Image (cartoon, rainbow, N blue to C red; front, side, top):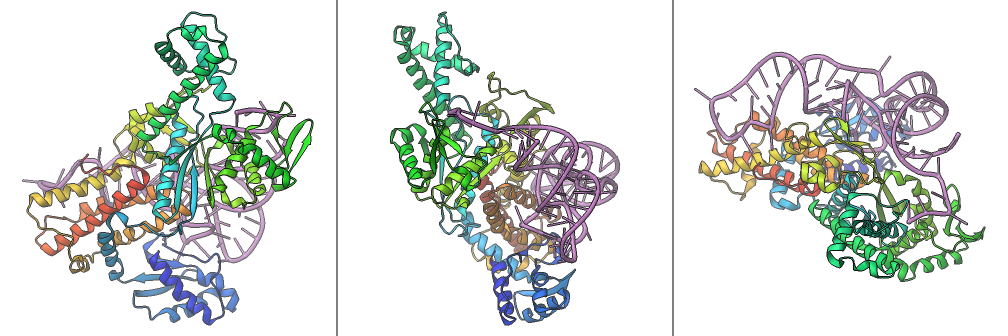
Length: 551
RNA sequence: GCGUCUAUAGCUCAACUGGAUAGAGCAACGGACUUCGGAUCCGUAGGUUGUAGGUUCGAAUCCUACUAGACGCACCA
């Protein structure tokens, strides 16, 4: 990022001479291929029309203006009119000094400018255990939070607990029915009730606590006890699962408190004052179509009860009142139809629609050796997140989730993910880290003296093209993190780390680190490995994956 | 019927949001160690980016129409 900024400043100065400004679409990027330089810009292509020259001659003019930069080895004009920049080795060698002094903070940056952002994710109803789809959202939200914090955002993560609606009632009734069944009482199981095995476990737990005494109580009181117990127990399990999955939520926000504190009425009044509500067929409607939704939506049904949408508006009103400039919601892709109305609501609340970002995560297809595992929430037949991470491990599961774009369907094959092989890149990356640790252990065995003091005495030795290649890649770490923030997508980081690991393994095979006579060279290479180790560890931590010293 | 997302090598996925000859791994085939961890490395082969048009200096990416798949389209939560 530093280099791009320096370049951009210089280019801007030249543009100024010609009375031009930086075009929106102009970029300074790392080219795919080495022969296109270290950095490349399409600036000349996009501004040639303004000066009435063909792109190549215009690029040539720009090149001449920029010659005097002493960081640069050379500038080339290539292809239709790209400017390709080549830097001196010192530029890359100095990166090493940055990493070694910043250590675990290397890559941290101020891209986010302390912007106050909330990420709300998982938010599964506390009516059953988390499944693998929730795991994907959990990994994404947690990792995004880590990355954005690292990039200088003021991040708060939140779980919205739907503890008020019909589903919770249904949960209570389901448990109550099972309770009676287990005690050989006649019971009618609710039609849309929860049929999972865990409902029996909850009922049994209630029997262990209360024996059969709930049967003595008036039914609504008994159901209430069942409901409260089941909800609390399930929520506790969810919290345990997320903790084990290394997922952190700063705030657990209860829908019930939202309703109890009258915030829904308040937001309805607010919308009323803005003349965004009307009554039709005995129901209260919100004019969401004024803000791009397909049609208006009901907030209060003709029977007087509120819709879920109503409390969602109140919830988002609450979010913005807490001062978040941007609210990010991570939803399952099956909720995509909900986005337009939510965006409409946000605008009705006087916010810009860009202040709500919804990331959709596609559902996860769970396989075992290529065969799909049938899942049915209704029938209560599904593999829980807990079963998954117990079987394949947290590291492997998280890395897989974070290795693809969220809007692509994901095949999650338990056998493949469990395999400690090349099918599973997480081990490849972790192995690179462990390998470096191993070399340092070996260096101690061999009584090789090494310290991080005065690295500047050694870095100039790292002159080989493989050295420079690695250094260049290390220098892209910060850019990669910023890219993840821009696209709200951590998968770039996974791929970056994979590449870094590949470069390390290649380097290791090509260049003996410790087995060489030249002591200064050994020292320089150890410095390089140390820097790679920091970056691998920093990067893995942002994904919530461990960086083991041994495997 | 309407809408959203997806379609890239045999398989699983990338491609820095319009850039240069579309890249990795797996699987296949052929190689590399008497020493730092073989969970490694090197090489070969594999593509009309679902189809057909369009936009422009330039398209996997944007637009239009198709095809196939997933998911939505309640005064459900």
